[in-house]
Image 1: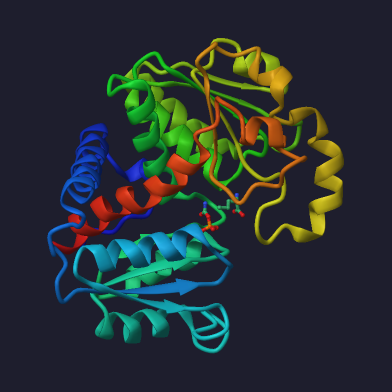
Image 2: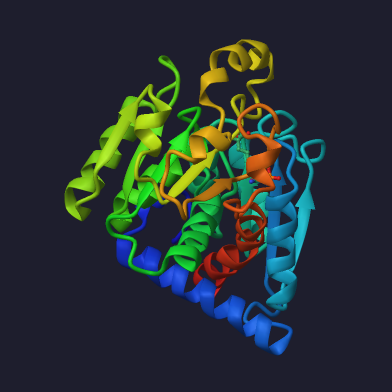
Length: 307
Ligand code: CP
Ligand code: NVA
């Protein structure tokens, strides 16, 4: 059975096909005021171990626009792995719904869900990666920079986290150059970097991991940042705020990239930390188009898995 767990599992052709479908569905809704009911009678169970604005609402609206329905299950309801084991949740929930979307702490819980589920599973963020975010981000990049992404450079400034992982995988699959700059000790995990290198060897992407933000943004078409402390790392917040200080995306840093650089952030943003108000609200920012594109990219993923 097909699932959607990581951009690493997608071939470049599959990625491009999904992005093309997302563009079609976005355009269809713009022209007709709605989408065709491709998912009539279909249901999506959405399991959350963590809070969400974008993931929850964009998936729910995607299902509604496509004629289906989504059911939100808050962290207090299922209590994945606490009230009931992950395999038992997968066994039961997958008898009620046509697909499961889950946002979890440990990525292993996503893998366990797929093992015991009768229906497709979508990763709505784990500590390992955030593939739906990544697909929405490449959709945004295609819209802003054109469909030939080879040789374009994405610079990620900050923590080597779940979002950075999905961006590395996608960039390396699509032939984009990828640079990441963060403080020592907060690099992408070695196995993630190795996988990125494998994809880059096939696509021709150039990869750079550095502690120097200026080196990362030199010649960049896209500057991307994310929170310094992810959900589940609240206890490290103060320490990370001190360590990541030199890695703020501010006007000075943006000025060192290409003149027409776009600035991206998956949101929620901690303004004044990883990004300044001036940049988030400034002329290079594409934050709101990027957030909107979560819905369009996920429609493509849902249609692909459910039809
Ligand atoms: N970017 C993102 O996943 O946002 P939420 O945490 O609000 O879903
Ligand atoms: N890296 C962040 C992304 C939030 C959408 C987190 O995991 O909290």
